[in-house]
Length: 286
Image (cartoon, rainbow, N blue to C red; front, side):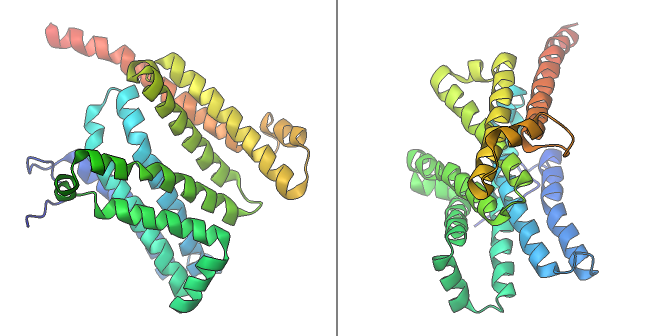
């Protein structure tokens, strides 16, 4: 069986985009490994390594889902060639996350298994891992041919369930320090909303600046409401109190505000791309 190197495109030529993507995907793990080896990963380095690998698994999973909206909004179809690579990297970080957790339990697999069964947030996280494993195993061209395009696509829609389970796992283990987990959830809401618009009204409508702007506002609002509801459920804090904090920078940047900034950045990139595209057409024709 011929193995294609990850930095080569389908024609076997070197792809700068794939090579740079591969290097960036490996960077967080490399940095964490160096910090662990040099004793700069905190007072509980193994625990910190577990958190870092889990966080990057969720981040990369959402980034792999963002490839489709990005290539449609920014009119960059070539981005599709790195989607599989990002998804497999998300699984690799999830596998490291689980392996490090087992190491923290002295590789007592009976204890690891019982913890996964008895602790709901671990059950949810392990379910996400199993889905990612199935997706990674079937991500090759050979598996696409073996399963058939329709069955393969149906299977790989499980990525949405994996993302949802991963976000829930992250929120549950974060307890009160949920700022980044809630921000990740906000990005997930944005992506689900984009796809719902694309499926119901078409890609052209979903990728317009107006739709992108509205989705950014809606995702930011949902993030703020989600954070308020979460704190209300755990601590009994009034919803209005948390929402007022989301309108102020007195306590630092809030998840809803960061999701709004991300939405604004996507909108700005889309506008810049639309402005530049006609110029490139005129230049190529002159």
